[in-house]
Structures are given as structure tokens and as C-alpha cells.
Amino acid sequence: IIQVSNFIGFILEEAIKREIKEIVLLGHVGKLIKVSGGIFHTHNRIADARMEILIANAALAGIPLEILEGLYKYPTVEGAASELIASGHQNLFHILAEKASLKAKEFIRSDIKIGAVFTLLNGDFIGWDKEAVEIILKGGWAWPTL
Image (cartoon, rainbow, N blue to C red; front, side):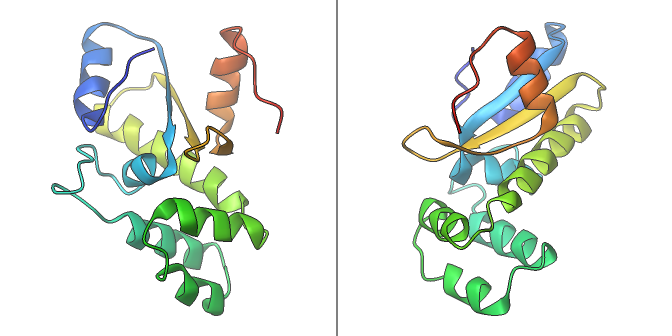
């Protein structure tokens, strides 16, 4: 387990140098959503497109306009995520997790296995891709009861 803070791109590059074969990006939706948009230095002063990435992907997923318009009232992605989940749109976070994994693979230009898991501040898993599940289970970690 490696804590990465804002330097996700750097740690991905280091993983390649150190010949790590599998990676799970596990973290808060407000941080990892940036990776879904191709942002690998995630400090808010460097790049802050969290809500834009969320709403663009929500629109592409067919979420109704009235919900999309309401998302901007939330000051955090955590609040918007809770609203989307409450309105039955949790699948969006599985889509975003898959995009984060794909963007990470593109960033490092490698075919190593990368998965992503999005959480809320309380640690609840809200979105993940199949690669993350496979890596976690293969590693003997307990998958949380959902």
C-alpha cells in the first residue's frame, strides 16, 4: 500500500520503474474523478475539474437534465455523489472507475493491470471496475459488504 496524495502520475511512473505488476487506485471520489478526466497531478490549485468531469460523464450516461442542473449546487463531489446514488445512478461511478483505470494505463503506456475503486469519506465503496475486484480478491483482501 502506497499513499500518493496529489502525485498520482509520479507514483504510476515509479510503479513501472519498480516493475510492479498490478495497481489498485483506491481513494476518495473527489480525488480519483480527476484521474478519470486524465489529470495526474490532482492538487486543486493545479487542476480542479471535478464537477465538470462528473457532470459531463453523467450527461453521457443519460442522467436527466434536471439532476445534472442540480449537481452544481453541491460544493463538493461527495455531496453530488450522494445525490446521484440516492437518485439511483450509482452505476456512473463504476463507469468513472473504469475510465480512471484506462487513463492510468494510457498515462504510463503499459499493459500492467490497473483497477480503480472510488470511495466516500466514510470509506464506503461507491464505484469500482472489474480489474480492481480481481486484484483485490486475488490478493486475499476482503471485499467490503456492499
